[in-house]
Amino acid sequence: MKYVIIGNSAAGIGTVEGIRQVDKLGEIVIITNEPYYTYSRPLISYLLLGKTTEEQMKYRGNSFYTDNHCTLINGTVTEVSAKTKAVSLSDGSRISFDKLLIATGSLAFVPPFDGLDRVEPKFTFMSLDDAKKLSNALDPSKHVMIVGAGLIGLKCAEGILEKVASVTVLDLAPRILSSILDYDSAKLVQSHLESKGISFMLSCSIKRFEHNTAILENNSEIPFDVLVLAVGVRPNIDFLKGSVQIDRGIIINGKTETSTPDIYAAGDCTQTLDVSSGQNKIMALLPNAYMQGECAGINMAGGEKSFDKAIPMNAVGFFGLHIITAGSYNGEVYTENKNGNYKRLFYSGNKLNGYILVGNVEKAGIYTSLIREQTPLDSIDFALVCEKPGLMAFTKEIRMVKLGGGK
Image (cartoon, rainbow, N blue to C red; front, side):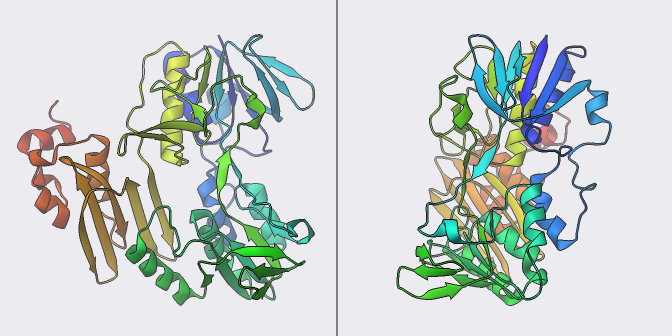
């Protein structure tokens, strides 16, 4: 059996480990368009901060490819042929497969701003190469504008703040991290970031760029030396050209199978079921990517595995302030906001739908488990879980299961 994996990040690595749980001998070929060992992408801001090194960023040990008998090929896939069961690379070569895994992740979305082509230097912030190029353009005299106050933009701001004269973050939304935080929690995090020296311009829209000046819709002008575009991401799937069914991302089932036999997909390029909302959506999250990849690998090798408990979840920190969010924000709410800590739980229909935690995130795992397992709230002491999450809020039977002593 010959397995081909397009992608060398969390989903691709999960696939290798899934395959090897079932098939110890099959040929595995990994195709990557980056000249690096597999690394953890969320750590690129910490590389700029000086809190990690390229060696420490490695997602697996130095012997991973050898131990798992993998062939690593550096190249860019331009086409997938389901009919001939082969992938084509930009250098003209073709690689055949028996089973294929697509784990090509996301690309930065760059809006077509008028005048953007005349801005220099400008960067995105998605990869190790992006981080290196940005770092080379920075010095203590530079004023940096970051367009986008989401996770990528704010991690970039944290990573470069001490290297430059100023960092200004601009966003069309009225609050930072608008996809994962509500108004009150966003206000708390924004105040923390402002106390460190980051400036924000929210509810702002860029009309055009005139070289290194942003002209806003209200005609105000914001000069800068370096521009970072962190508006959002989109699945890296343009090369597929109808070889699998695509909506916003590659459509997969609970076994990570696509619409085409022997072709699987995992990670940020896929669209999958969010059990907290019942909606099919793209969830560009490293833990989900790995678990989908492992599931795909097991099934590609002839095993049986489903991954049907995906939920949107984010765990991030900024200058020591921790944030964890998960699930969907609908239903009734329970809120605590005191002493720099924020908690909001969303529940309905006898189940927990989602949560936002800022500051004290110690017991987040309990809330995440309730969402993933769709635990009936009337089977636990939910009032106690809201105030003081812990196993004592669960019945004896559930505690035994969670502690590994029951079924």
